[in-house]
Length: 380
Length: 159
Image: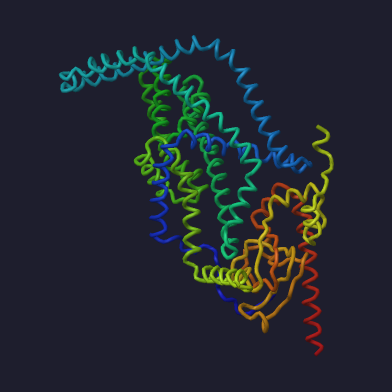
């Protein structure tokens, strides 16, 4: 098949990247989807969890298929094994959690008190130095308000517990959805492919693969980000001498899955622990704040663009800007969903942009339609 | 439990895949994995399958009908080959990102099985044995083509 002069009918993406119209459409579509998704969070969150479970269970399922098991049985077996592990972990942890609840209640109370004492000490130190603050009696006002809020913590527990119970049924959808992704994922991909005209088929296959690759890269990037955050925070907390550095680091890293809001919660946790365990050394709490601030900066501007952003092949500036846009459009859910949604919309948008602007592919499609029309009418 | 790992019985669909030269070495359990990866497309006589110069993303296997390989837009004068059932074309797409070296058109109404490059690359990672069997068939096919080309070049020199 050697040919000397090769005409250029390539359908691969332009190496110059997409134009401003395509990118404006991608960003607008991402915003609209985020706005819609926050209305159906009860479905979107289990769907995302199901995707994570799917990417976890896919390799063992493939292993079983290779050993001669059919796809349906293999999907059922790995999902069942996953549920069994969850059940065993739940049963094993339940008595331990039950026994510790009372202790945790005391610990939470003492940490909140420790945090309030730190705040009070800090404000009084500021008042001692700045007469304006002293005249405003800031420390007394803050102490009064926070003490009454701390007393009302018990009032907030009930709505949180009810909220968790309301979410439980939709979260139970996750393994169910994961099972069907495992069993019918290929069939769905082929079903989508079969709906595409022959002229665009190769490009669509490429698109479907890219979406799969993007989703996998995002979730793997998120796991890498969690490991990096945990290790950095644990190392910093260990150097400061704060107890349980690894557990604290892990909790903060998981909380950081919710950009900004999760980071604030994680920071508060670290400061409360530092202030309570070292009540006579307020400097420790300030060091903890400094450490947390540094890790957050590293996370938002280095780790996240390098892991999640890099896995989606997004420019770091676009990553950071889109996180802000996601938060503005859809609040906390928007912060969480913006990068995976943008990644998928970007791949679809760029591919559609390439296809509809390719005159050769459109001409081939029109030719195929004409052939089909002729075939349908040739005996009329 | 033992029953689950018993050698797989073949089905007409798997038998059809097994009859294609690219998959001839595969066992039924291996064919089932490949069957989950391939796509089927139907083309009318005269329909373009791919153009010369286009980036190749997939290899095509002729399940039924005939396919014409020719120079771009020269189905008669630029005719390179006509392929029948069981044969395959566009195989270089599995190996690299090189552009298609000729145009492929359906010579008659035909049914093609399409194997996407990224699925093949995934197979290399997860099922190296299946990928190696397919690669061996691919290598044999390329070797045979090189021999034909070498012979043709030799004959040309003697003319």
